[in-house]
Image (cartoon, rainbow over all chains, first blue to last red; front, top):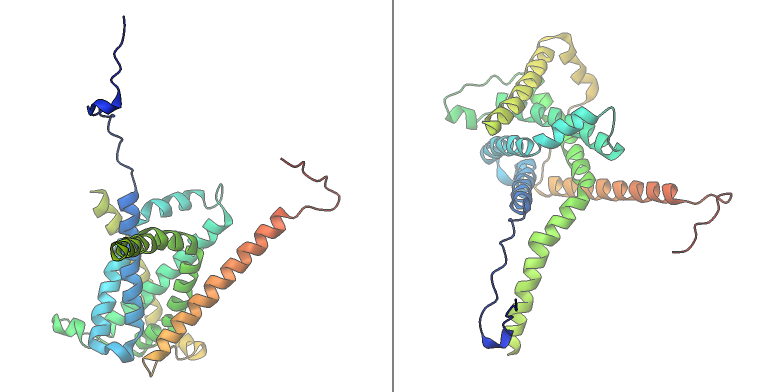
Length: 187
Length: 87
């Protein structure tokens, strides 16, 4: 039996290919990146008390606490896998990252909980009275350095991922917009 | 449901840490703060920004240096080892 192959110049569209399954994870990475970016911007602002003032500092502290819970929930799978493999099959980079993440969690919980306990504006506006004992004031100020350096180390250990994601979601789209504008300007 | 479970796990861990800190605050361990120093305080708006930038630069460059050094040591061929044939 002879099969008829239509030449493409007849203008008849070729039969549609079966649809590829959507690439998994592309929106997931974008979501991770957006949450991380929001946390980082909030972190920089929350550290700068002379710039923001005490009231904004306290509200941003509550926002960063929510952001950190979201960040941890997003990375639960990594935490569970690394916890299982910590003494067996995992890289030293992963082990270091895990230990550092644990220390960062402790430091953030210390700084946020002590901040809530010594709060002067945010919790009072919600009708909650606080008891600023000197230990909590000291803990809040003392854990700032730990949080700062551990966050820097966390960023440094994940720098490759950050650089790749920024290139993918910020640099490339900006470059394409720029080239499109240039092409329009040239014509 | 999975999301709720994960969120609750994170919150439970955080509450455990806060309880431990609360216990420390009520014991003699709280006095160790006199030895550990007063902590961090910023008086101008530029100070925290400079400190964050410095911490990031130091951490990123040291991690990259350590990673590069480790890679070079791992890939170094010893003089007794026969050289790999060219592909």
